[in-house]
Length: 342
Image (tube, rainbow, N blue to C red; front, side, top):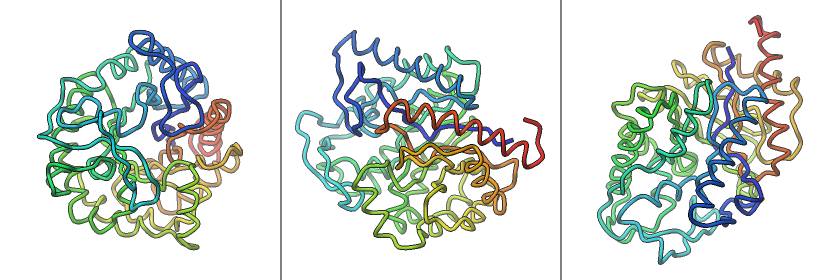
């Protein structure tokens, strides 16, 4: 009961990449960079285990950005001529690659880090991939001219890699779709279908992560514009409840999401965000257990999985470490409080 996990990313050590940034520059090149990525992955595997986290991730140490880390191995993407583009309905600007030709994978994308993760922990492992709608929103299309067709093309490539990750021994494959909280009508019209296409044929646990973004200023400003109730989930949860995806990861603690919206996910495992990624304040175990208790009004005990609201990538490393410990301690307190053996 209450098995814990992170949403995906963790802070990169200063010897691997710039710190405190969402799009950090690497500190090495070539073979030295490849080794540094694995060293950082091992560091975070051990840190998660020591903290008491149940489902272990690679922390996305090998990816500069959660979307571009996948795109770097896709033929038809031009990284040499990036252009500035508005992301998430122009919430912020970013330099993005361009789609210039038909898309195909240049072999495996994440084999090295997924196999390394599987080899270095006996616990269940989760691996994250960007969702097709969010990829479409993070590239400049100069070839397809149709967002749905582009999303379905990316979904096919994601499915190819996801099936290979499953063969690598990954227990949970999670697709990150923050765009679902921005383009709600499109998410229902074709986004969930693209997501299911990305996950088709998988027999491991499948998940989708939908949040209100990293704790960067542009996202904080956007959240302040959303009013006293954030009801974006209300539009997309019914479609996800009817989908073949097993788990849904959502933002909860310190948000204005009405908790009753979680009831719309009946039949799904719900990864409830109990760790705030927009604040350096470390949650107490009591605060986390209280958040779990509120969620239990709408989510069955056996389906509730405490998680982080989003990735921790831009945070200070010591803050992220403390939050991981709090996550595990809060879940343990909730097990004791709500009648399960710790």
